[in-house]
Length: 215
Image (tube, rainbow, N blue to C red):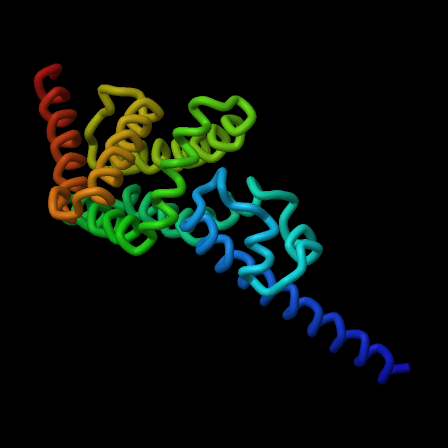
């Protein structure tokens, strides 16, 4: 009886490892196919073929192309951006945090160039097509909430009151990041690694100056 249980456990473990490996292969394949074809031009059949797996294996892991696309972004880019947002909420050093945030953000864009291009492509489509907009808005809202929390924590600790509501400031930071990432993708030399951080520091300095004026 014990031997049967051990065999079943081993089989289950092997199956789980196989599924995990298949999922990574599919994500790798999706990154290549999306980069070649763009979001709209990529097909699930081509992604499965690129991974050397069946379409059944693809749909076992992902409900459809949209889920595959966002899982790819979340796992290859999103987690790194979440770490950058977490750093933005730190107060261990008043001066170097914006610079470090800037460098890490620039690194994410540079090292995930094709995925960053795909994200901007998807954003443009979401602006035109209501059926794609809901998923885009859901993920944007999650990122905005994280940035707003980081902003509130940092400004509270620094004793600098927010003259703009945190969600609105988060929106502005996201818009700045989007714009700089596009420029970095097109003309890397035009966006120094510390530029994003310099602008963030200017915003903090401006809020501090406004708070002093109001006292």
